[in-house]
Image 1 (cartoon, rainbow, N blue to C red):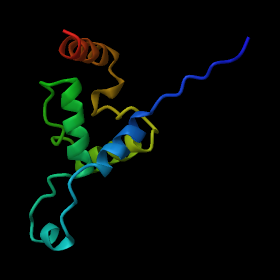
Image 2 (image 1 turned 90 degrees about the vertical axis):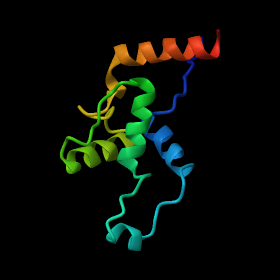
Image 3 (image 1 turned 135 degrees about the horizontal axis):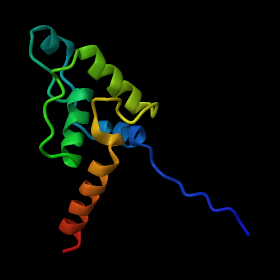
Length: 106
């Protein structure tokens, strides 16, 4: 009997690939003039979270360091988004997959 290893993509690896596909970030001059970065990593991860839980509320009520830290740890596959992101919520993931299957396979 041979051992079969199922390969899977961790969320952080997927997120890193997703970030490579985003629009280019603004330059430092725009950042220092007070124009917020619309494609930052926490905002991108929040957008992906809304795919899983569409009515999910804004995460930016948390301290910026908490959001950035959880985003960084998710990106390096150290956690499932901490207490902020819903990627570790099995019920939300199952519901999301059910809805996705309904959309793709009517």
